[in-house]
Length: 236
Length: 179
Image (cartoon, rainbow over the protein chains, first blue to last red):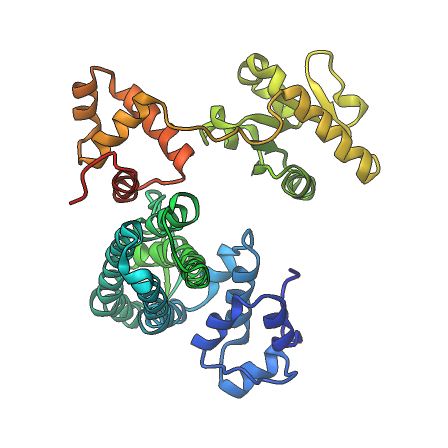
């Protein structure tokens, strides 16, 4: 899909790529936005238009990830955004997968043992993700905010060399999808199973985007804030 | 298949990447220089689309891989030793030319997925039981490198990467007792 701009009609963009719905929702924008442009919607809500558009564009174009542009935003904005995505996973996407999965397992009186096992696997991933969210909320993000308050805006950052190349939550969600799509056996309700797959795909894709920002943008900022390297230039 | 595109021209690289993705369902990673490619485990690629000067700069690497190396450019890139791809042609001709290169590379399309071999199944059982690579090597009397190769093949065949995912697969397929 072509890149979105300030004058792009937001509802057209959503109709073209419905994966934007949860992203838009976490910025507090409800459906029923009519034909308003992205710029107009942002102005109404007091959102940073450039930041909002950049986030949407990274979602709709897998290969588009403008690191320099994202690094140019105030780090607090990134933390706010990641906080919102975390909240969305905890309050909406995880419960949504769990609700569908629960019904899928219940179907047929839980006789499909493979479904029960796969559901337990999901429960493990859910707990791991919730633990990370809690750690972000109570440890990492507050420390980062505090450092930002002390030092101001980080204008030059050093790339983190030892970036994690894997994320266990992301990998396990991929495995979970493989287990269901490629290896599931026994009887199951097709509609419920499809609903689980769609919900899991949506969560997996969202977490991939979250992790890109987390690992490639926020982690280098955090590294810069936690050391006194002369390469770092801080704007008071 | 996974290709490396080595050229400083982002436009050329993106165009070729787009053609490879769209018409050949192939992945391609872009490198702006041969040095950049050399730092990225270059041997993992199935083939290389590379500018002639960059090929010359790393001839020690590309010469042994001449059957998998395609020089980018028109007539000037023509070289008896390497295949070449002329970008100054209509789209359909370019696609045919890429098709012909891929056919000559001899690996058209993705490798077919296969069942696990008996040895891979044994390794999978050990992984599912929570054994570390060294322990698996000791139990099966093979080297750690062989264990790693088996694990890589298992992941490629099953589409499952994590130990917990592999354990679940093993359990679902009766390879280990359910806990």
